[in-house]
Every structure is written in C-alpha cells, then in structure tokens.
Image (cartoon, rainbow, N blue to C red; front, top):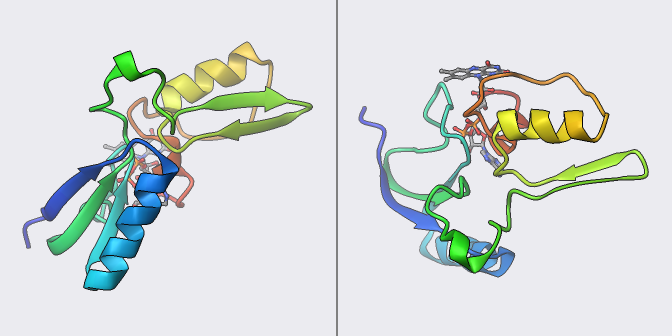
Length: 119
Ligand SMILES: Cc1cc2nc3c(=O)[nH]c(=O)nc-3n(C[C@H](O)[C@H](O)[C@H](O)COP(=O)(O)OP(=O)(O)OC[C@H]3O[C@@H](n4cnc5c(N)ncnc54)[C@H](O)[C@@H]3O)c2cc1C
C-alpha cells in the first residue's frame, strides 16, 4: 500500500492543533502526527483518508519568530523540550547546559517521534 496522507497540515500554535483535532473528530478522519518522519512503519504518514499533522517546523517562516514547537528550556535540573527539535539540536542544547540522558543519534529524527518508542 502506498504511504500517502490525503492532506498535510502545518500549524502555528497549540490552538491550531486543538482545532485540527476537533475537525478530525467531527469528520471521523484519522490523524497522523509527524515530526522527523523516520517512522519505519509509516505511522507518521498513513494512507488514504488520513490528515497528517506536520510538526517538523520545516515550512515555518522564521520572520514570524521561533517555531513554537522546538523550544528547549533547562532550569533547576529539569529539561523541558518541544517535539520539533531534531536530535542533533537536542544533543547540542543538552551539552551546552551540562546535562545528559541516553537517546538516539540520527540527526534528522525529532524528539516527538523519538519519544514514541521508535515505531
Ligand atoms: C533511517 C532511520 C535512521 C534511524 N536512526 C536512528 C538512530 O540513529 N538512533 C535512534 O535512536 N533511532 C533511530 N531511528 C529510529 C527513530 O528513533 C524512530 O523511528 C523515531 O520514532 C523517529 O522519530 P521521528 O520524529 O523521525 O518520526 P516520525 O515518523 O515523525 O514519528 C514516529 C512516531 O511518533 C509519532 N509522533 C511523532 N511526533 C509526535 C508527537 N509530537 N506527538 C505524538 N506522537 C508523535 C508518529 O505519529 C509516529 O507514530 C532511525 C529510523 C530510521 C528510519
């Protein structure tokens, strides 16, 4: 089967995501979330009547400021990070803050998909 969603949606805020989820529920259409797009099974794409929610930030217009889903904060020993951070950027930010945890090393894999156990 060809892996190809019916439509790809790019969002600019959490409010956009909520609207999209409500729309998909109302229309009874499946949603697939993509950050890095490395899913072995195609789970972040789907096929047929599937809406793909793309959180990669690849189409983000930087003149609007930072992409809202690739933030990284470190305070009081706690890291808070958004799903759109590629692992290479996450590694650099962790290093810059002198903190460590074990994770993968593929530069283009993003935190959102990586935290979903690698499916
Ligand atoms: C060519 C290749 C090389 C790889 N190399 C490495 C490596 O060096 N080290 C390593 O540890 N792993 C590696 N992997 C495995 C990789 O960590 C997993 O496949 C991981 O899930 C990919 O994350 P992604 O963001 O790229 O994927 P995606 O395809 O975007 O997402 C993977 C899954 O997570 C879900 N998901 C994504 N974002 C979100 C979100 N924000 N909220 C909820 N669900 C979400 C998707 O729907 C999908 O089910 C590799 C995979 C491939 C195909």
